[in-house]
Amino acid sequence: MVSETSLSSSKRSPASTPKFCNSFTTRIFADVAGDITIVVDGESFLLHKFPLVTLSGKIRKMVAEYKGSNVSNLELPNFPGGHQTFELAMKFCYGMNFEITTFNVARLRCAAEYLEMTEEYREQNLISRAEIYLNEIVFQSLQKSVKVLSTCEMLPPSVVDEIEISNGCVEAIAMNACKEQLVSGLSKLDCDGESRELKEDCVAWWVEDLSVLRIDYFQRVICAMGRMGVRSDSIIASLMHYAQSSLKGIGKCQFWNPSRTNSSPTSVEKDQRMIVETLVSLMPADKSSSIPLTFLFGMLKMAIMLGATIPCRLELERRIALRLEMVPLDDLLIPSLQSGDSLFDVDTVHRLLVNFLQRVEEEETEDYGYESDGLASAGHGSLLKVGQLIDAYLAEIAPDPYLSLQKFVALIEILPDYARVIDDGLYRAVDIYLKAHPALTEQECKKLCKMIDCQKLSQEACNHAAQNDRLPLQTVVQVLYCEQLRLKNALSGSSGDGLLSQRISSGVPSAAMSPRDTYASLRRENRELKLEISRMRVRLSELEKEQMFMKQGMIDKAGNGRTFLTSLSKGIGRIAIFSGQGGGKRQKSGRKSRGSEGKTGRSRRHSVS
Image 1 (cartoon, one colour):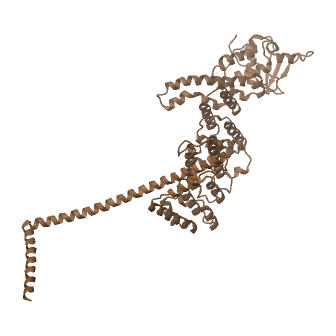
Image 2 (cartoon, rainbow, N blue to C red):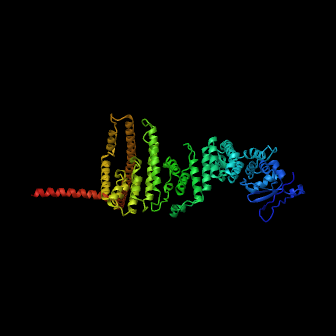
Image 3 (cartoon, rainbow, N blue to C red):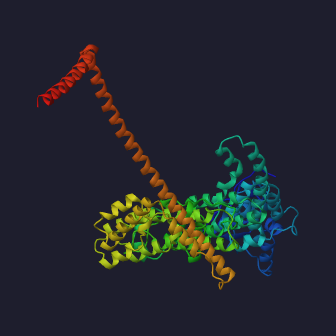
């Protein structure tokens, strides 16, 4: 074989005849001029029939169709890979050297399939040469398989799927990922004493490589990895990195752009919406996989902004609701896209609460039987955390002047009574809402303040509510009454024991109830008892603090009294030192002499009379 040269091609024009000026053909076929012109994508190639019909079945059939005439012009429409790939195929037909790489192997394989360059016409034809390179070089490496699969995006999907290049690359990527998973498992054992960053590098270094794929190929790769048993954490890392690299162009300022809600989505937004929906569908379904909440909220905001399908958004909300007690407050502050509505998306948070309460109810229903986990169950603890989270969320959105009373009250009512041990956070949110919405009617204020349980307010909150001019008079009276009742119970030493015993006595199930209803009633009473005990603990801690302050005050007063008596005694001692001991004795004897003189005087007066 001679050294590699390049085939030159010229634009076809009606005024000039295309010429083939290649040094190799000029040297070998110096006395033979080109006898056929082939046009590919508007590019004309002046070639020779003999080397082409020897290796290409398609060109042989096309030439054979013109039996009676000498064909000199052929056109190959829809040639895969374009005229550059055709030029490489012609080099192969002329025996010219060129290198098969990961960049051109897919195009050469499709071109060889188009030209029908099979073993029927010559051994080691272009199809077999490309297949050997794929099987021995490409499919043995994850990185090379990804590169070849990315080049398939520019080729006709029908041809790529027919010759199964994409399927081979997808399976090779998944298989090599499994191999890397085994190797990384051993490396992770070696990294146990190292830093966390080193462990992450040992787990999945190929995560960044997959982000160059188109979303449909990426979806096929992730599905193949799931079938072959690749770990969920590696799949989640791939999804996160792909989202960061493909959705990074979306700006936060687009949330408050009212013009985009009325306009039709652009092609870029459609592609991004498809990416979001596909990534959500690829999230692992097993409960053991822990997707970061920050990533879930980021995807939810993207889904809302891009107008993703309802099932996509509901799936994200369901996954977030499974761990709602771990959600930070900032993630709940989702901007609203609807013009004229509240600044924050309150409806989405309301749906999150609905899903969370359904999950808690399902967990309680699964445990059919009497509870044996003591007074503090995991479900009740999660509910208390969510109650605190929602109270803080209500306080954040309360200053919004566009927030309707109906939505604000709906967020308060959806949580059960036992989700809040104390209502200080709720009282603060209501007070902020009343301050930000002075146009509320008296009935609306009463409706809102009825959400507050005055018996669950702390001493500090009660003191503030009793002097709050924004509260209705009825609410202030209730606060004062509850404070008086609490003081009475504290002085009598009952501390709410009567209420607790009353709840226990009322929890006896009726004989006419079914076992399931009885169990539900007992669970409800058990939750009420847990809540009452939590309240008692809060009250006890408050009483302990007050007792400690009283003791400290008494100690301070006692210390001041002892100081006064000590200084007084020291002053008297100094007086005694200056007067001397003899003076004291004379004073005593003088008092005795005056007493005796008084007695003799009285006796004398008695004798004279």
